[in-house]
Image (cartoon, rainbow, N blue to C red; front, side, top):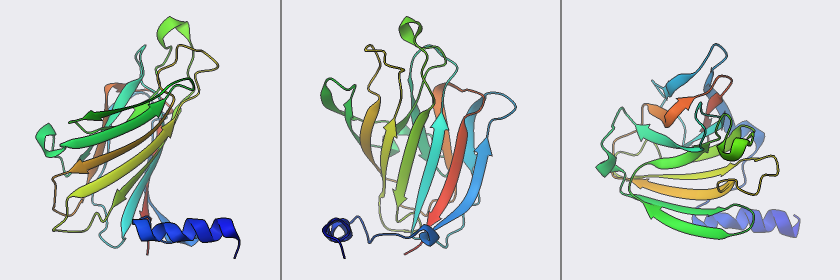
Length: 195
């Protein structure tokens, strides 16, 4: 085993789990906004047969500013049930961190952007851990990145975010929404993670 593989595998000691193969992921559902924009995307009737969930999405909104993606479980829109969010982000020049109390966990690029810049779609990977548990607060970790086409005024194109929810019931549905509407051609995919 190579030292790098051994190092990655050792991350399970910190709760990151073992190294997963491509067969550890199973597609559950996808949503592709081919016909126009949408206020939100919901994955419902999520099977309770996996260990964790992962959402992969490429998103853009219809506004002129970048916008957070809100992640909510089981139709719960009460922000007080999402008490801890921590952000680590950088715009390529400055690294910063912050805390929040709403489920602003991902990012969608603006359609045209401030200063007239043209963002590409933002890529987001969201891991929702132990989603079937009935006695644990739900934890999510999100990594996202945007390409501002070289514009120095871009808003934080790279971020690692973690969030804690007081929801303890098993997650059977997930809704993703943004303050601005998701733009056409945004694409969302839900996967189950085994093991």
